[in-house]
Length: 222
Image (tube, rainbow, N blue to C red; front, side):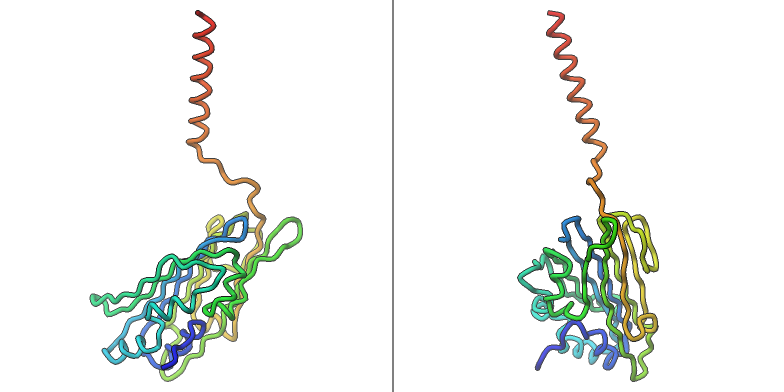
């Protein structure tokens, strides 16, 4: 049978499964626009029939996951699919690197996400991602969905529509009702000028300086 595409897996889950679906996407963006992403989605099934169905959909199949997240501009580091029989949950985890954030739009999984980083005014950058709507029905309650996006941006955040922020870590947490007909997550930031130098480098430099001074002083005394 044909596998259901990843971009719409949230929609089709709800049509068939009476469980709770959780989706978390954690993305770190570097100054040059490259970065890495970790995705973890999982759900609880209430019967063996539910478990068989989600396996047929392909979103918990390693081969299907590789296909949906693969492109010539990104590199998949790890795909893991597993079941936890202690709490009757099934999980998929994906780790990947990308050359630029907007290049992810060429993968099937993010074809409708409109990922972008654009130049703003006064040496700023504008990040955005489109979150498509999620249909609910057949007695499936929207409160049973949990969707989280976490972004680490390479600069000082100037404006945003995140639900939580801690320095350059921005988090967006949604239910389908929050998303409605679709929603953009966005933030404007000013890139860091220089990477922060670790404190230990200063201590090492000071140590080397003192050794040189002692050496020159002792040599002079001779």
